Amino acid sequence: MEKRYTSEHVETWRREGAVVVPEFFEKEEIAEVIADFDIIFPDRKVEAEALKKKRQGEVGNKLPLQLSGKKMGKTTMEQFRNFENIPFDCSHALNLIAVHPALIVFARSALNTEDVKLYQAQAWAKFTGEADFDQAFHCDFGNHTLTVPSEDECFNSIAFIIYFTDVTEAHGPTHYVNRSDSKNFDGLKRFLKHREDLSHQKELRSFERSAAGPAGTLLAYGIDVFHRGTNLTAPGGYRYAVTSCFKKAGNDAIGYTAWPWHFTKPWHKIFEHASPDQLSCFGVPLPGDSFWTDETLALAQLRYPNWDMSEYKSFISLN
Image (spheres, rainbow, N blue to C red):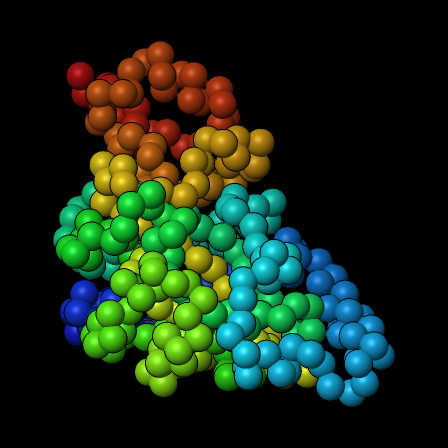
């Protein structure tokens, strides 16, 4: 598989906590994922446009969201109106993009381990006028761990935000602050002492960088990195993105999603197309693991009748 990132990208992530990799995904992969977004979020563009017109009628020709850059911004449930956990009832393209082999390799390199687990993955669609997407700077450790970020980034996690549409400054790119910049003014300490410190937010904005880029662009960042959502202002604009978060296997301090809790979702879409390596990121034991016996193989095959378990069964036959 052609390498889609460099060792410099990994080192930048380790040093600064964030790095942008333009065009990480290929055109064919992007097109397949976009087609799936249109399936799982049907008619959202039309509904967003209707909402936009309604708001314009209420406040004139200027939307209140266009003024939000002048204030601190905040996180609201409206921003996550189109934010869904995998798996989805669509093709395997979107269902497996969060565990693309290149992402797994990147996560292994960044976290310095061969055994990584996926603990969060969503599809996230945003549309101009649907919500005020402007946020204050924050860090993700608040809902990824009950403690605080480790001083060793390899004991935290690596989070990816991937754009599958072209994202300019008018399409709501994530803005972030390099770790070295935020440390200059005790970023984490100030944040934990007073999360609505306007002077802190102002300082962070003076160092913010944009993750804007063409479709296929990837932002890799850590749970201790300050970042924020920005508004979509392009007329009829929309942003399709996928989140994908990996941690070291056995790192119980980090968590977000208990995959079995979503057992009613169409997991067969993943099991019927994923490699053993990809499935292991969800916690499925690899072929040859002692978990697999004649009995567990038979039961798993009943649960997922179209799952190709030949690699798993081959180890049993050898024994």
